[in-house]
Structure formats: structure tokens, C-alpha cells
Image (cartoon, rainbow, N blue to C red; front, side):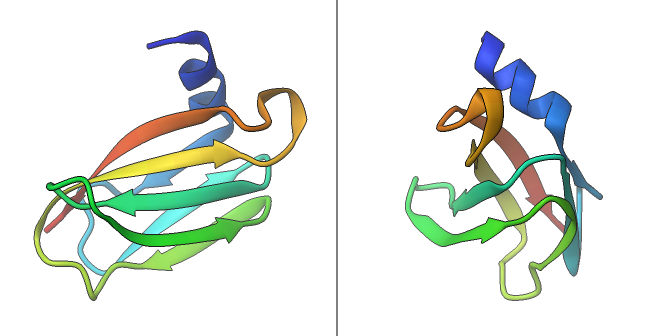
Length: 88
């Protein structure tokens, strides 16, 4: 884990994981979220503000996804971290 990855992961929590219908993203900063499928194609991109944000994943097939979270402000601005998301 590099320093930027560790810093963002302290500010942004994603749960539950594995998930079935929704994922909560609790963030202390404004972020951009990109979700990638197993082939590396981006399947969703959007922005979230500070606080607890709920993201509906009902339209995703079961499997493993990579979620790239990029800080939009603060000391970590433009730095990214990657989270694994498992859809039941």
C-alpha cells in the first residue's frame, strides 16, 4: 500500500462488502468513484460529497469489481485508492 492509498483509505470507508443491493460510502472528503468490471472496462462513474452516501448495485451482476476512489479536495486531492467490491 503506498502512502496516497493509505491516506485515502483512512478518509473513505466502503461497506458492506460483500454486498447485495447497496453499498455505503462514508467519506470525509468529496470524491469521484469509478467502478470497473473484471475486464477493466469502466461501468459507472460519479461523484459523492462528504458524509454517508448510498450507492445502488442492484444492476450489477454477481462477481468482483474494482472501485477506484479519487479525492477531489484536501491534502489528497487527485490521489486515488482502489477498493475491491464483491457483489453477492
